[in-house]
Amino acid sequence: MWSKEQQELIKRTVAEGTTDDEFRMFLHYCEKSGLDPLRKQAHCIVREWKKRDGQQHRDVNMMTGIDGFRARAETMPDYLGCQSAVVYDSDEFAIDFGSSTIHHVAKFPRPNDGKIVGAWCIVRRQERPQYIHWLAWQELFDGRSPTHQKMPEIMAKKTAEAQAI
Image (cartoon, rainbow, N blue to C red; front, side):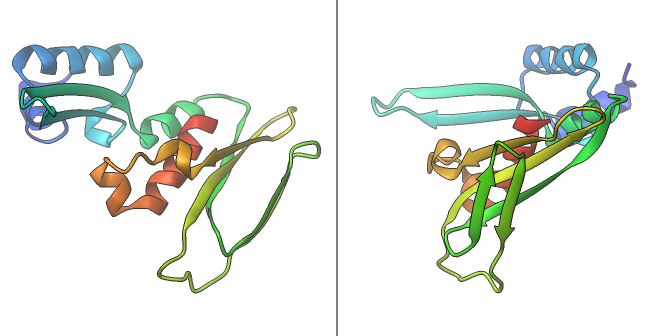
């Protein structure tokens, strides 16, 4: 499925730090899922840390990226798209699940000390009511993820969208 050069590129970039066996498992995951890691549709993340008892721990996670979820959704003939946003504590926000509507007035500029409350996504499909998904920030953020600490708004919005579609 991937040339030798492409496999070497994937291992150096998308699956950096994997062993040969872990890398083969990642390629299998991508192939069986129909995901293209060169298009950022799948990621292989290696994390290493010391446990409290001083022992080294290693974890490898293979995951579908937001581009993979979007690509998969686009293949569905009834998919009409989605809309998502992050809600801050200073925003006006309400969801009416009965009528499948959201009232969200974002306040700009965002305050530097504003807190993210959560993120929402509306998925639209032909001949079905639109689907609203709400993700509370405390359900997502555990304080340990460097990506969530560095880019909280992007991660909250992407996670709400990925869970919805």
